[in-house]
Image (cartoon, rainbow, N blue to C red; front, top):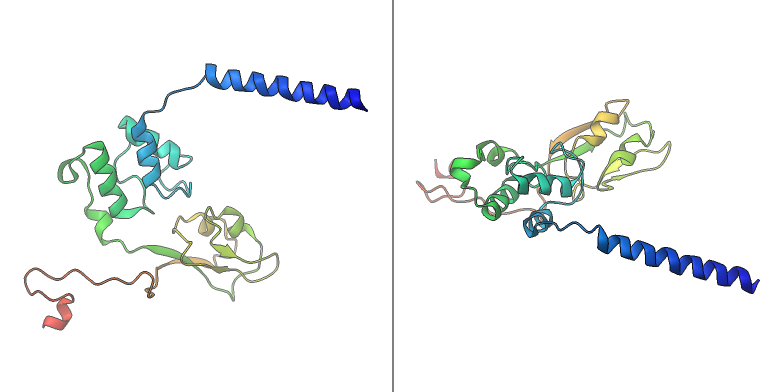
Length: 189
């Protein structure tokens, strides 16, 4: 019994030491800009950018292989912050016009069409879908990033995108119109 414990302990220490030495020997330095960009990205690894995760997207941005508008869930604000980090002038190097108008979309499940197959919440990168096998599923809108992963796998087409509803948590004042000074141009007419 004691010999088994001693041999397992010796083997664990030996393998741990070997892994530690290998980690130091084969360590690859990552530019600090990659870590800075990765911290800005949502970190949900949804794949909307075409890269396998946010870290790979950050590496592509740092290498200049991807536009600053890479992350749809991050939206315009993240694109502007990335452009600032990379030193790209948003007016010249990035087409942010399309990002400004798009409202944030979230998934919505028509509960009368849901069969409870569990394919959607297995694909959700943010665990925004709640449900169980053979039970109706629903979406937690605060956690949904609108990545289309659940829509692609739904066999009954019960999931669609809708604009994220305004609540007290995400409500904000509209910016005033510079010409009229009113927040809503319909009120100024």
